[in-house]
Length: 482
Image (cartoon, rainbow, N blue to C red; front, side, top):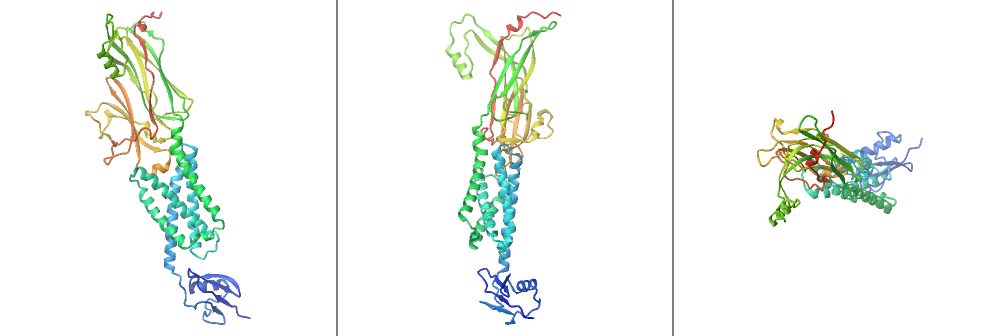
């Protein structure tokens, strides 16, 4: 039986030696141990003499020349795989939130692109072993290049967004580490000329650029343009109904209708609301011929009407309270109505009865709020220190709703400290007053004094027009028959 002829070629630039058996390719080897493994697979004896010139021909270098730096090559593989997998995990963590729950279509598309980019990096990580190995797959270098470029682009985007506020987040060390890793990875693939496996480099470059621009465009549209361009508006009004006198008691029942319609195109979260029904007391002077300059100046400063014969001296809050449930939301084209009845003594000294109400809304395309906002905290039932500072002391009674708020794009959420919305209804002898703020927590775990701009989260307060009727019109009524 004839002996089989083995030829071992000279090492290439990476230290890998090609092996042929009887003229047919049999693989490649990094070392003698690897060579024997190749020979065993081909059916040759495991203990064959590699120095037998009749059986083994060494081309360009002898049997002792194995220049592969296995430790360095394996370290490179380990670092590349680790970096690609961490980057893929980060993209999946960021993108999944938006892909499944973004408030806009463009936001969801950005999330899907992040998830798909992460999946591409997982494939690239698996192919690192082949490209830094024996390169049996022609496209392994292409995928490694793609995986590294994805990391360069996404880390650049994340750091650019982070730099706008420069706040500490748990993700920041990951961003910085992956950014440094990306620079090293670019150098590593450049040194290995991984792009040589790309058959159509222009098409590949164009595809990567288009994908990056699409992701950036969707992020800009969902986070910047759309939340500013879409109309967000509510129409509010307060109306009095027909008063009814009590047949036995000296009082009159005055129905009040509070109504709101979302006539914009964006749903709105309700952060707080309050209404006021007030009785105005005034001094009357029927002989006065013209207004006094001092009076109209004071009225101008107060932003009220100047009246010739009447000088308002007091406003008494008759009824006050919330209107809309906190954390409810009103979709475009829908409305909400609250109807109440105010009881007013017939011997009151009012000349006018007024009604108005206000509500604070947050655009749903700017953020979403934790369900804990529904749970109120009453100042008189607190058993621990307040989680915000109240000045001046002592703090008046209040009902506060407090919960975490997320931006509409998860890229911004991971590059910022957590934000919290605090919506308060203050209680006093003058009735209710409402306000809200969005801010991070300070080092003591309290609401920070550094409140966010209301415009950033699309928080807006709407006030109905003031409705007024003469008090005497409530008294010129016939008592309903029993």
